[in-house]
Length: 161
Image 1 (tube, helix red, strand yellow):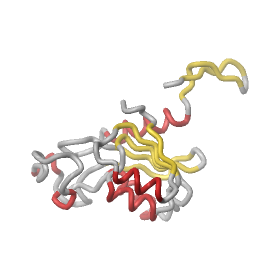
Image 2 (cartoon, helix red, strand yellow):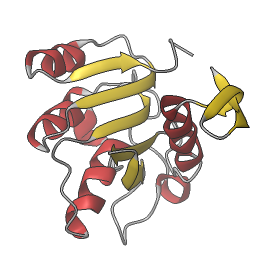
Image 3 (cartoon, one colour):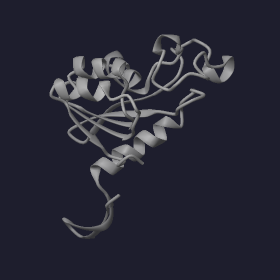
Image 4 (cartoon, helix red, strand yellow):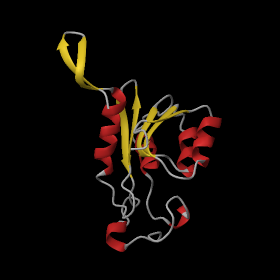
C-alpha cells in the first residue's frame, strides 16, 4: 500500500493513501457490518472519486439475519449453491442502495473486499459499472471472464491479500 504525506501545497510524500487504497479500506470497514457467518464482504460504489453507495452482505431488510437463525450453506464450498443463501451480497446491496436513492451507477467503479461471484458480475454488467477493484479472490473465475467479456476493467487491489 503506497501512502503519501502532504509536504507543501500540491506536493505529496509517502503518508497519503492512494485513491484505490482509500476506497478499499472503506470497503473493509463496511464489511464489518456484515451479518454473514462465513465471509464478511463490503462494497463501495464510486464515481469521480465520490462515494455513491455502500453495501455489505446480509439478510434482506426485515428478515432475520444469519447471525440469528444460522446459515443454510455453512458446510458448503464458498461460491456454490447461491440459491440457498439468505444473504444479499455486498455488491448487490451497493447497487440496490444506489437505485433506491435514485443514484445512477453508470460509469462507476466498484471497490469490493472480495472478488464478485457470477450473480454479482451479471448485475455489475447491467448496472453500467465500468471498473471493479477487489481484494480477495475465489477459485471460481467465471465471474471474472464475464466482466472481461463485457469490457469491464478488473484489478486486484489487494494483490490477493
